[in-house]
Image (cartoon, rainbow, N blue to C red; front, side, top):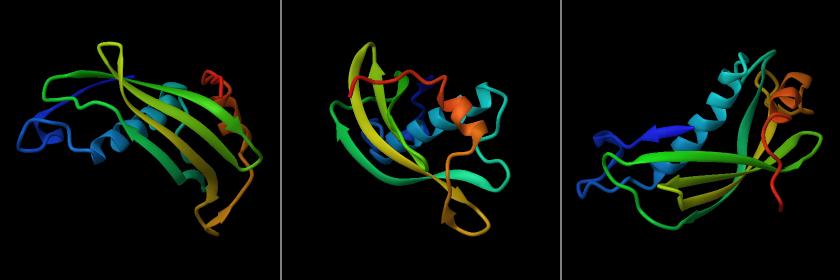
Length: 129
């Protein structure tokens, strides 16, 4: 998925504010569901970030066109570990391992991955880790 860096994404120096890289990754995850014609929450089950390991490698700035790529590193009964990387002109500038858990919105309890989510996740490339 591609995202253009807008003025609202930057600090006073025109550099992307660090928290926006996390937003870009969230948008890419949601967009993957939407592109499959499926909302990222159904039957009161959605996904929450349990943990995240982030590596900021290089800055981006106003006007840059970023590419967000997502891979599955591991899929378990109620969680999925993703590698999300952001590239600027084919140079990796950001990397995050994101552990998502399926959560029942009514009970606020972790639940097994629903079939509809497994079908969407099956279309995401598998990583080498």
